[in-house]
Amino acid sequence: MSIALEPSWLEILKDEFEKDYMVKLKAFLQQEKEAGYTVYPKSKDIFNAFAKTPFDDVKVVIIGQDPYHGAGQAHGLSFSVQKGVPPPPSLLNIFKELKQEFPEYKIPQNGDLTYWAEQGVLLLNATLTVRANQAGSHQKKGWEIFTNKVIQEISDRKENVVFLLWGKFAQAKGELIDPQKHHLLMSAHPSPLAAHNGFFGNDHFLEANVILEENGIEPIDWQIS
Image (cartoon, rainbow, N blue to C red; front, side, top):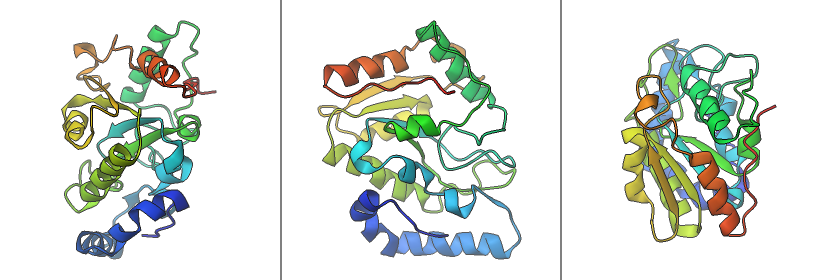
């Protein structure tokens, strides 16, 4: 696992990489490699969310659970897939909700959310790696400690960040966030199994932009080309 963290994040998180849990996590990932397992995303993309969204730029946080486990999908941004890969069902539902909130929105054929990340949307999975074709296979190996620290540092050091917490897993992360300083928008998950139970019609993208503008922060252009 290469640790080429973006400088603003490295300044905040550098001590984490020497801690016991991270040493064990690195050893686990090396064992996966030596055992011949394919791990997603590629090493260079594990910290992609941090590379694309420096700490000072974070305006919105969208929390996912773990990376997509199919070939060519994951590239280190929650809910996002690489260019040329069809958007998975949850991402399609996100696009459908955007179309509902913004009638002029054009549903993209492309599922790469890098444009959001570059505007200040931290697309953070709680677990940053996964074994190919085995959902959840790298959970409880240490990643959650690291990403909880990320959420805690955003809460402690910033103000008026909008957290989009979809589904019970993401909502549980709300305990790490100071609701007096930040804005927590919660709903059902965009998965086809849950989207009709409150994700559709949640107006989160519209509401996030209203909150940002009210606080003098440039809103997000959600349109993916």
